[in-house]
Length: 525
Image (cartoon, rainbow, N blue to C red):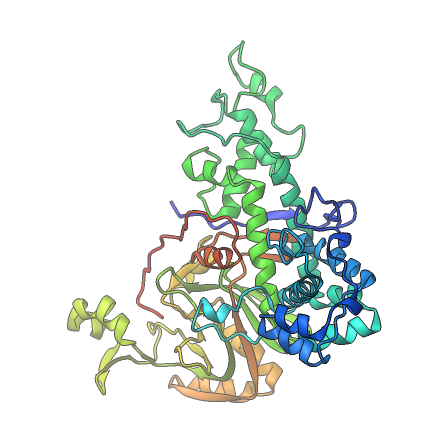
């Protein structure tokens, strides 16, 4: 049975209004402005110099000749802004100390540090992803937070400035709304998990059925009133069965829909994997959404109007041309231990009928033991100390390769293993990205770039030919386990365990790291 890949669909119409994100109960880290009030005229430059230890705070005050800023109005605006940190999945972070310092200069310095830390979190993210993954090369968003803070303090526009720092996309707003909703659900939930036990089939009576129905309804897989209990009795359920404990066809169909979305065999039977999904509560989902809000804050707010984005967690790509969405198609990406890295890397040419120089790691682990007969059967020869697979129908790169500039030997390509695109779980490569209908995609790119004739001529030769793009196409290899599409927020399983890396750096509650256990059926990259 294939291990699951979550594709939980959440309604994206959760309204931010009505969530009461300003209440101290909803955000216990909020502090009253009165506790932090400072009279700037009572804070001397000497006292402020002595109170400041943070380098960024020091630069802020040096630019102001060590003049204090946090009067009553500004302090109120800052504490109000911090009370909205829940909208960004940052409510677990205390930007201000639990208790306001007694000394005015220390309160002044702490307020500035909180303002800078919070604005940096919104503008750039709390953490630097390059400290977690050394090969992370996605372009960041750059803004001078300290200079911006100084400017808006003078203009009296602090609230509007804070609101402008986070991503302003529909996706970010939808992830935010879903986070707030699940966080509130988690705070009020006090339910025991559904217990394990025997499998449950249609017609079985089991005391766990009501909880299963509730879990399906809570996540949109079973509409209210459609558990089919009346049908169960008509179909032969025994007299005396407890109301609602019969596992009906309608319930099984709801389970099958959940299983299909999570990559589990969609047989409608309740087993251990299905129970694990049903027991994933709102707290887990809120945590996942907080991680993905952080990921969005890392990214450039102005991505190229022509680009290709590959979501390696969800295994699909999207192609934009001049700001218009042109194409969406599924892909196969690296399996755990052969993860596709998070790169920003331009595509610069198409390779028709590519040959494949086998990396030494794949040669040693996958090919060396197969012998000369295997190499002859797969059109492989030795050249310059490497195994090279010549162009042809069995070539592991298929009939086209999309060359990219990076030092990781990562690129997009075709594949002879077409059946993998129909799988629910598509983390099955050695790290490169296999594209569904790659020839069709290459022809689309060639047409948009005005090189169709050159590409078709190169393909017709049957030999390896290189066709340069007139204009390079930026490619972003992203890892987003939560995303917004067609009016809904979708969650996917953390195939690589990278959500845990981010959650740990964000000081979110830790969970057992689970990664997919998939197999590679071919030697292709």
